Amino acid sequence: MTLRVPLQEIVESNREQDWRNAGVPEADIRFSASTGMDARDVRYLRLLSQKRWLIIVRCPKRTARPWHGILPPKTIAVKQKSGSSGTVVMRQIAWNDSHTSFTVVKNDPRIFVSDYDLMSVWRIGTDGRWRKVFMSAANGAPKGKWTHEAHETAIEMNRGLVSKIQHGCQDDYHSTSNPGVDQAKDHFAAFADGVATYLADVGTCAEFYRKQGIPWPYDARGRYAGSTG
Image (tube, rainbow, N blue to C red; front, side):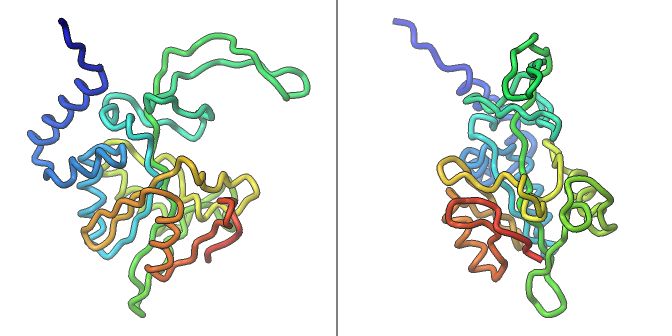
């Protein structure tokens, strides 16, 4: 009898060996298995947080894990949700006149891996408390100029990431279009003082915010509830 190993397992096994060869600690490789992140990115964000940063991200699907660095991360222009593989194939679509339905015109050869969504970024203030690095346009608008600190923070984060951050922090997007959090699907990772913490669901993430003394900007249904300062 021939035993068939799923492609996902083969690719993940190969990537794990690549990460070990690159000197990534086993703990970061194990952490990537929970979060769907590239283990090199786990290491980088964990070490970056030693600068007294607190970085919280919504993780991609776990199946996205081996595709970082092979496929480009999904950009903000890609509105389609990633599939069970953690990837998305672009499709060209045509909307009807009322923009209420569409038909697929053709598939686009470009394939993307599910990206990391920044939720919020903080730094220790002079009072010893977390101070928000506001990473969005002024007043949380969807477009516009960022502050110098936010711009420099994004540059430093992306300098060492395999899958680059594609947009600002969701917590800072003060809009009714803010997607909120999905009670059934979302999982998160937090990086602080050189430690990576897996937050398996929305409730665990909200409790982490509370323990860190930072506001949780979503209501009981996961809808965006307002500014976090």
